[in-house]
Length: 532
Image 1 (cartoon, one colour):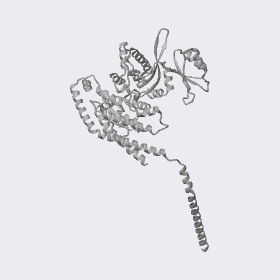
Image 2: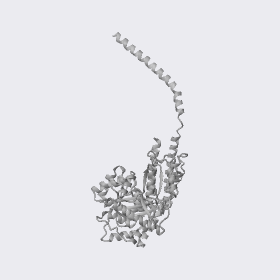
Image 3: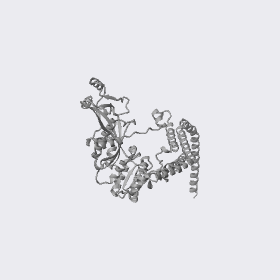
Image 4: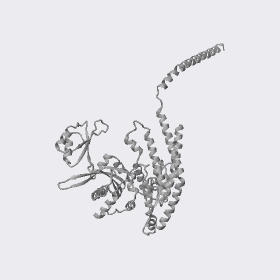
């Protein structure tokens, strides 16, 4: 017993000595580490980036609060405008017999007219709302939806032209589409939302058309994948024997001369494939004389390890053609120049539009019945010289899919556009053969002029490239552009695409309900982030 007590006492003594030793060592280490830690933190630069981020958050929050305050200040004035517009719209319907309301009533009274239920997603876009209004006044029933996680409706969702409005969460996109189409018995689905990709809409089309009788105005998944890639789209054009812009990768001077001799009337730009190299100059071929061309090519350093790209250029410029295709036929078309210059005032422009029409008819027919959807094709117009004349030649240079690419076609819907959508329900294709006079009228109607763009502070700074000097100016300029845009929408209400004499509530709701609630939600979320 005595021996065990002595052992326990010795263990307690060793433990006490050990704890004192560790405490003394920790104290010395702590005293020695304080200068080291101070030197370490002193070597770290001041966190100016964090301060600038906080400053930007404060500026953005102040801008959001300012927009909310402006909306509240202008509320009495806009209430008076809303009331006056409703009165004017009522008297306009009563006095005028050529307004859209009478057109809808006349269509509804026609015993041979069968109204369709048309489902549009993306009502919160200007072209989605314009399309819904046009379909409504043509006598049809329109169901609208937005892809959003917000708990309140957008201004466009309050339009009287909508029979029902839905909010679709991003996570349950396809299942909610199927549920709405079953519930509303929709005949046609037109996807206009920018929050869903063209591939997601194509997958939704596959699910909808396989499970319901609803028809979808969209390309299938195979064509979407093929048209999304530049190389596969070019291969598609070559296989369909459609004119495509030449793009060659050359590895020798001999291959350059062969291409130039094969097409002596064409103009090419030659550059290195890698745009980041320092010696990436652009060479224009051919030159004025054959000897100058040979001299220029002989000075180019080219080999298999240093290839060049030879791309065809257009003498007369580039054009964009916005299309509605249904069953391999062009149902609606708008043609506009890429540089937004005025055109269409001469007979030559009408002739060019007619030539583009014919090419688009070929493009649509080559795709067959699968070619249903919205497309914007980029065209390059060149001149080809024959022995006795000069003619225009149009080449297809690229493709963009979806309704966002054809917004100029949809923002001012024509009767041919509405008839084109309804043609998707017909089992028999329309007769595309038309006389020359009708083709000329269609070509003249397809010429589109682009309105002048408003001044953008962000685009101005982007052109000046001030990111390296003052990177914080970019988000400030974006906020300023948004502030000016919203202010002009509040003051110049008649220019807002949501405003209509016959349907003014979307404009008022967006300015005084939807946007303030959305801004308030952003303010609260950013304050929570700032606390974190």
